[in-house]
Image (cartoon, rainbow, N blue to C red):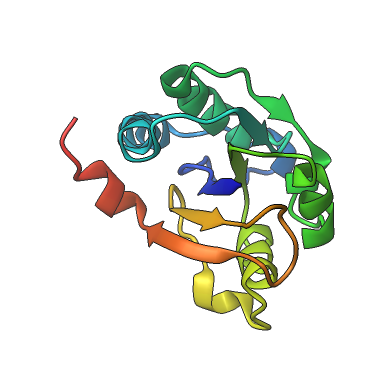
Length: 161
């Protein structure tokens, strides 16, 4: 089983009176994520499922990725900011093939660290639009992951279309 983790794209700054859940991607964030989505489909080819946080910026990022992978994104609370890594492990428990998960920091780096059996997730912090591919043997479990690659947004955007 492989898991492609994607941090959402560049979002609007927090504004007075607007909840964090409602922050949308900026025009720049959308344009960058479209290029990243095209690069990701070239790198990994296909996926069976696409999970996303229910926060607007993640859902918008997932929609751009879904278009390239021809998938329908599924919302899950296992990818919100304060979710435990265990929630994502449980969600992926029955998965095989390749899954994509779109979420937030520091949740994603905490999950990466748990997957690799490392105590400090700050070593894997993903910047906006950053991605990594993890591989698990038969089932995704803490300490059983292998980091295949980690790429910044800039690296992915430089790939030829």
